[in-house]
Image (cartoon, rainbow, N blue to C red; front, side, top):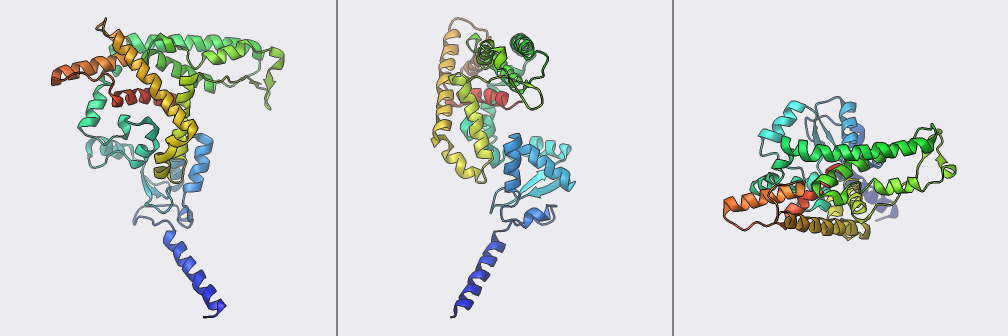
Amino acid sequence: MSTSAVLLVLLGSLYLLYQRLLPKPLAGIPYDPVSARKLLGDGPDMLREIRKTKAIHEFLLKKVNKLQEPVCQVFVEPFSKPWVLLADSVESQNLLSRRPEFDRSSFDKMGLAPLDGYHSRATMGESWRTTRSWLQDLISPNFLNNIVSPAMYDNTLHMVRFWETKARLANGRPFDVTHDIDHVVLDGMLSFIFDKQYEHDALNPQIQAVAQLDPSTLEIGPNGEAKFPHAAFNTFTGGLYGIIDAIDFITSSPWPQLVSKYVRYIPKFGKAIATKKRIIKEQVQAAGRRLETKTEATTALESMLLREKKMAEKQGRKPDLENQTMMDEVSWKNFFTTTSS
């Protein structure tokens, strides 16, 4: 066979392989034809959006708005089936609440891998319901009014006093408060999940850094804004934000299933996960000791342990106050907080 013939066969084979690897749209569901002609589909566009916003849902919403369809498909994972997006709130609620055949998405399970046994990674069933029951008292009016509200109010006042210091140093210049709000929400959550030991945990390092700042060294941004330094977090808070970075790392990968399996072996992510586990275990043990001398919960963690005691008594078993799944549930509150802003 001549060289030309070999090249033609090779090129033909490569073309056929290329066609085979292109996204395969599901019949009858609208999609972006431009994305369907790309080998990696919508994947590169999604990754660019996540790097900017750290929110995959922003990209999906833009796709729905572009196609102007209540049901559409996107080609997110290379060489895999497309995702089907449903943008109808009534039908979405029906699927989530009345259709048991539609369970938790595999993407959620993979993306939240650093949270281990957190209930949103579990298939709905008896184990999932048991896990959810530990959280039952945390949305009661009594707990929200008497435990949560005072903690959030106190931390908000702490932030306002911090802003007064910043405003004085900025001397009339605007300054960014995005991270401050993020930190104060985390502080509020930590102070009612654990106890006063973690009050102002994320914001205090920033307050100390600003207190030591020489006003003459204050950096001015391109639009005339005052730019304040951001101090390093303590071990636990840094670990919590490290876990969020690990989740972002998984969800922004073209192959989240593969990445979710080895993410904890990456030193910085593995250290963050280990730190979270160690400190939460210490706090669970401390809460258990406090409950030996009192019968009412004054923190979220104590409430969860009391709920486990009641469930164990009803089921005729010994309470498992160091249940790993329960400790993973505590991660849920911290995860929710650090991604809320």
